Amino acid sequence: MPTNKQRRVAAQRRLQKQLERRAELARKRRRNLLVVVTVVAVAVVAGAVALFAGIGGDDPDTAAATGTSTSAAPEATAAPATTNADGTVTCTYAPDTSGNPNLTEAGTPPDPAATPASGTVALLMSTDQGEIPLTLDRAKAPCAAASFAYLASQQFFDGSPCHREVNQPTFGVLQCGDPTGTGSGGPTYKFAEEVTPETTYPRGTIAMANSGTPGSTGSQFFLCFVDTQLSPDYTAVGTVDEAGLAVLDTIAAAGNDGSFEPSPGGGAPNLPVTIQTMTVVG
Image (cartoon, rainbow, N blue to C red; front, side, top):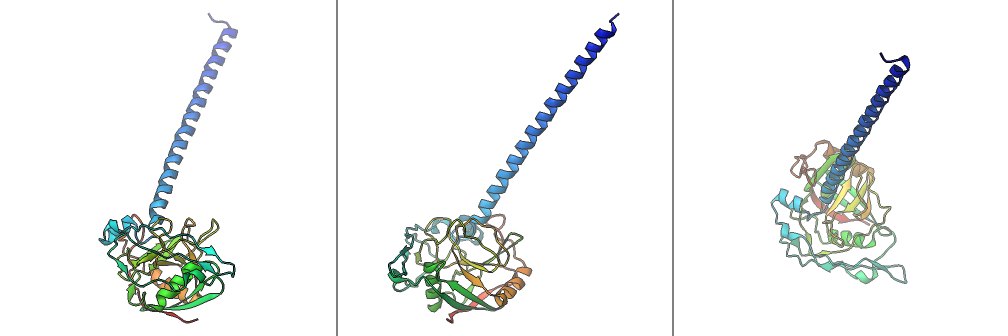
């Protein structure tokens, strides 16, 4: 017969083993939870990369969605702008030699070696859904502002559709600026992005699209109708006023056809939008 002391020792051993098993199970649960969280985080990051890479007009997923050739990716070599002694900047508008058949010849902005880097330029984007006044900020993005105003003066945008709309809580944009409406078109030149690590895209921002390759900004732009969470890779060139935002809100409320899902996101707006004229007014 075991003594009381032996029974107590045996009970303590059983209790110790139970506690050890419970601790091991807790460690396994924590390890499994960490694996799940890591997998989900990787999936979210990958989804974000796929989603935001599609801002550029020459993204392969965009081309696939619109039936254009993925060989249209530009060979961008445009150098960043440099500041001159008089406060102007030198912009480089490099020829696009990619062979993209959706490019439209428009020349290049005049006098790029002395581009103004102060003040603003007012544009009126007249669409079949209403007028959207735009203000370009030369101080923030002198090369993009000069290119945008130049293309507007050449009637480059006139008659072009806004080919993509994205309507998500943290990513709401209307993308325009491709005369062909394919999502891969633009002018026959490209230039460098004008961004900083602090560049953000709050509601009302006008930003320039690109293909995801440095120095690949062209004519495509997007108008943010919500505070949009994007990496600072797209030149913020100006702002949309309240009257223009009201027009964008109406377009956004109609949604899109999802033709660019799952990547790069969104689709053609359900309420079709055509830029009738883009006019420099100041």
